[in-house]
Image (tube, rainbow, N blue to C red; front, side, top):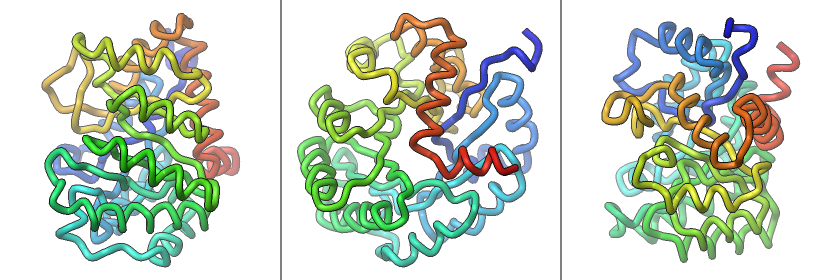
Length: 270
């Protein structure tokens, strides 16, 4: 295949401000393009880092960004305000709220403050119309309850990023018309149960991502992940849904454009 015939996909979640990419971003962006990964959303996990993440998006045409306070950092970071997040959303390449969520695996001690932070991020998504980006680990019951409660109050759009939770949480999210994002975990040999959860979901609700520099899919497992490797996970997704890669890639592009409409409109205006 030449570059013009490689199916295009989007890495819907990566962390390009991390030291792994410092000083080499043009190389990673170029490798991504060679693999058909023509857009990336880089995620700011601590608001004090937002200027750096914004600068990355401003410097590279294919990169968009989102910002929030990661649940594992909530106890150490200043509590985010809804107004802060709404103000950030004015930037033309700011396309999502988060990542936010709940993580009781390592940071259950901060569960209460995590829930407070999550609700503030949800309100920002409700006010801006931008999609919420959720991290969920070992907190399925609280996660499903809060997402549903807030959605009943004011509907909002959401992606369960790097989804690797239970079938029950997947169903709860899909019942709210949310999206599930496949990371490299879905490509790990021992992840059949997770692949089954994805396969049971509507293909119209599936995104792909790397969570780079983490969770590189085979054949790069254990190495630094990068946006180009989204293609490996997407090929696993195509197999799961019984689709040709070109059709699955096109479907995930449609899904991303529907959820991250601001990014899609930016591309159209460029």
